[in-house]
Image 1 (tube, helix red, strand yellow):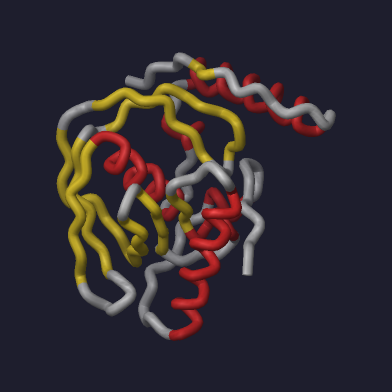
Image 2 (tube, one colour; image 1 turned 180 degrees about the horizontal axis):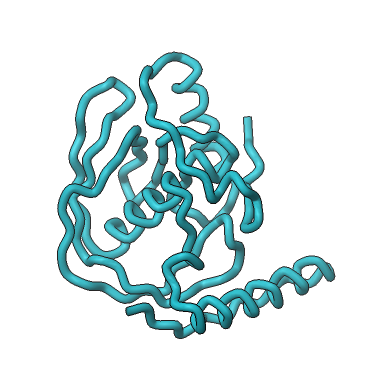
Length: 179
């Protein structure tokens, strides 16, 4: 089954997701459906359960050779700083230059109920941080100062108008550095 990806303005994206307490067959099907939804999105590398309206602490990712899922994730270590244009399936077509830690250590639970740890840097580290934000109701806009948010929101509205008019929105990379 494919889910509709919820977009900015949907209140589910601003809510805290509940921890997963039991990995059962229903949850395994949900994970499969999340991967299907991710692949059908066409341009994402990860998807958090709240993005499809499921308030559970789950996210899936396909990063190169690794297709994985994690339940109840947390970042237990981070260091460095890395600037990169970040996008989000729930804020379509908008890319904003964001600063995040360069390296992280993610800890969570896998489908077998085992504790896993994943060290990551640069893009993979950013992806973990971004998806973890979704589990806590945090969007890219929430990480911006008021002026940056105002500019990014104006660009997002422009992109939405273009999409609503039937035109293919032309994303423009926003050079908004967050401090």
